[in-house]
View 1: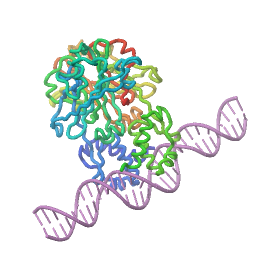
View 2 (view 1 turned 180 degrees about the vertical axis):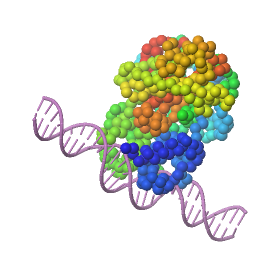
View 3 (view 1 turned 90 degrees about the horizontal axis):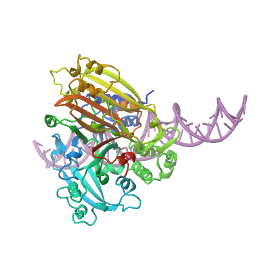
View 4 (view 1 turned 60 degrees about the horizontal axis):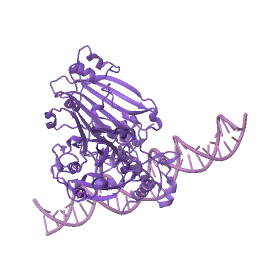
Length: 268
Length: 268
DNA sequence: TCAGTCGAATCATTGGTACGAATTTTGCCG
DNA sequence: CGGCAAAATTCGTACCAATGATTCGACTGA
């Protein structure tokens, strides 16, 4: 026997999927649902919560529940697509629409710290080594909200006390990009690993990214090597409702790029 | 002023993050929390719900709340890593532990249907074209649970009525793999797009994958081309708490593979 | 000793109520 | 007609209460 609130949630979910409530449309109010199903408000609210925590509706005090839309930006995430600025995440294949036209705003912060265990292991910094790393954190804003946060970790030992190495610690953009800088210093990037995962945001991350409930975060880690030596780790965190990652292999028909293709994960 | 239930949730989240409640440990019971915070049960439950919907705890009737662990399998998802069986998702770089040692079980189902709008557009099937596609759905189970679901879409027109083309419609594994089969039929795969996104599961998907609340799904789409002609679309859906995707570029130090590396998205 | 039973602990579900806060609508007045 | 204020609508937070389901451990009887 299915619990009452799940039954309501099922019904509403189906109504949404079938298009009876298109994106942006208003769902019945809690009172209406109470009447329709003959249950208490608590039960109705649990049903709505079920949809909320799945990212399907937005509930706003005083005005009701509306169906969410899903229209992510698709980033070209290939390592080969790293632009002149090796630190820049990726150029992105965008589709026109809304606030995205706004020019993104970046905020860079540079720190030198001792690496945590996980970062140290990835960068191959053992117990005896100097575990200090240069952390270049770049927050990218779009439409007033944090769009993605990127943390780049460089072993301090790679660049310590060299003329150009100091640029890495400077709080400014690196002309030509960090990748080129590393190459000039004798650490050309010869390979990289990308690991992509997803998780739910912590409470802090929710407020940091200004995302409602039911929105996962995508985490994209890139560990770059020079030969067999790790030279940097780039971790990019972004809300999954606004981002998709794109990789390509081999020849690609250029028309496809122009077609503004993207894969909608909500498709059935 | 922060709502009461968020305050409790914050406290608990911090306790978990600081390791005061390690993975697997039991949180205080609802009664205890009621006493500690001097609130009603409903409020405590809302706090726990906050952690639940973020995938941080498991709440089980009759036994309490326990901290969840996160230990995903890392799949090698490169197109270049496609094995002999082109349809197989990817070999995976695994780490020893628990149920994963069990031999995976696969269930294949083949259908021929008219493509939906989204799939038709991706496969380049216009209004006037024959929009029927061969769908090969492969469910992979591990430890009795659905581990990942893969849907491969082939334009029917590619393979219709050719001797080997019928293999694509057969309900058996394709010897040598679908990719090789397509190549033999004059459609060698020359390139591919991968799009990776994440979303929360629908109610159906939750039960399908037997996943609790707060677990996102990763969706991995691969659109493969022969020249400028799309020849197949592979969509893989998998719970994000058990899967990570790995791409690599350039030379890789083989020791790194052996190190059993993985990037834990819960790292701070 | 061991298996089965029973009960306590604990969470799940659902109902009810009250008041506060945000939003929208309505209506009045200039 | 425009603007502003009051009212109605609607969701947010919080409390209390009752019953059912599940788990686990303690007890009992063979």
